[in-house]
Length: 257
Length: 265
Image (cartoon, rainbow over all chains, first blue to last red; front, side, top):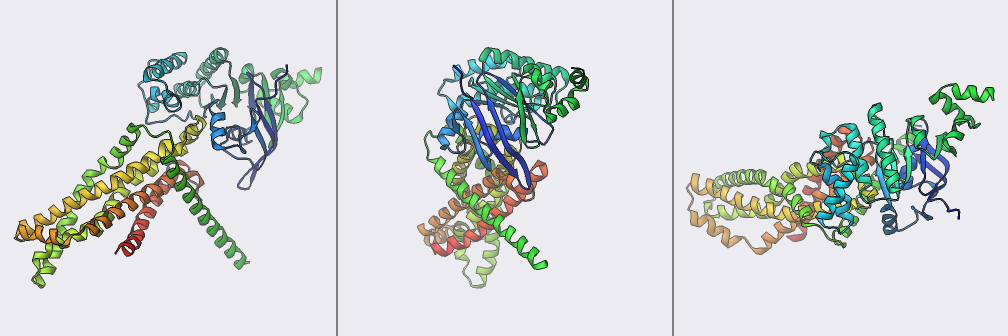
């Protein structure tokens, strides 16, 4: 049976001040799949994630998560929907006055009635998954950029969410640390099977993770395609993006073909 | 052309302030609603805030209370001596402190020390997406961050005010009795005779209201940092908003002091 999309944006428009950022965005995201949203800076990629999370309200259009419009539901329903989410923010958004352990334990302490012993077991398991079990007493300021991102990911996965959002997961990291984040992503997704929405600049490396790649350009999603189809697409905006970010080899393939 | 631009600027300022006032009103409503909403708080969250707002302010309150009482006694003694009424010094110091100076100066000192810290802390959390992260974890920031600060401020302010008054009275005693040679029985007797329950009630009401005003303005300013007209982002944004929160709280405390006094007199 063909399941409907888990997340759907329908004709979403948003203006910030005088800047019309989203000009009728349409996008469907399916359960268990990984979608990577790419595009140049300032095109509104992170804004799409914020709309799905219900942090920003669109001027018009619908943002459906599990069939419910996140802007037309009660606060309690939104809270219920958000309990399926895990978010890795661009700067990890860790609570800087809490230790690594407390950061990961926070959603468990506030959202579940588990005992401190159970919480401790879950936190240690997540930190071990991220190779961070020796840093649990450190504060975020004492960690490197890559470690902070891994703590952010451990916190995002603490409640075993069904959908995980990654906002620029490798920005500001060197190649080795980016690869480390990708390895952790692979490991956790194959273990937990979550739907992943990734906003990234790291083209073409990020394509290896994707089931679908969507290009955000000129205020709209130009298309959402498999990585292979994306690289050979005839859409002028996608072709332009592929040429700019991946070089001419793909263009010559098209011409020769 | 000039008139058009003038009225446009005036209108945009007016709309901005109406918008801000509405936002602050809704903020207060949501915090109070969350304060009484189940599930209730972990005691540790509240005690941590009481420690930060109340306990850490004790030293500065003792210090200012002592010197305020001392200067009141010094001024009061020299004035009362002109009318040969030095015996009333105790009641003059106590009434001045309990009804007026205690609540106002306590609130101003706590605003400077804890209010600025509350605003900066929440502002930095907003700037670094920590508040967004809480919302995404389905944790209500009103309940988790703001409401415990409100409860702590409302509990701490009257207690700090009481400390300020007691220390101030003993500061006045040190000057009046110790330095000026006033009879110690007369100092305390005049206080016992003239201070009524209504005076203490007025001081209590004031300190509760000032606690609420301080924590409301400072929290809301930090929480809505990103909506500030001049841009609230970065360290400069936090510093600007913190300054404006302290100034607005202090001015509001003085304005409300007049209105509460005129209502309760």
